[in-house]
Image 1 (cartoon, rainbow, N blue to C red):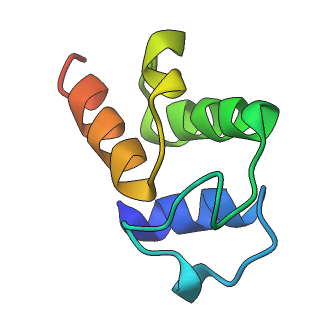
Image 2: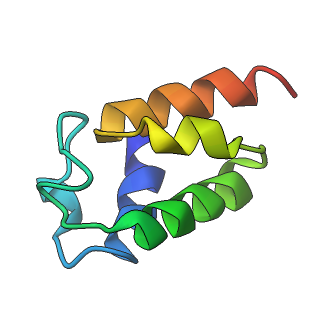
Length: 77
């Protein structure tokens, strides 16, 4: 999952995929703003075929948070 997420993140952040780890902070390390974070969530929804509620996006801080949300909502399908 991390590999696919790296690809998605690279569409929104100017960073090499190998530099992205689960500990990478979305806002601080990747400099993504709120709109980019929403776009990242939408792209993740499409890639992983799930629906992420807006309330879940608000709490995202790290790549590990994105993975946890994907796993949580993927299980609901």
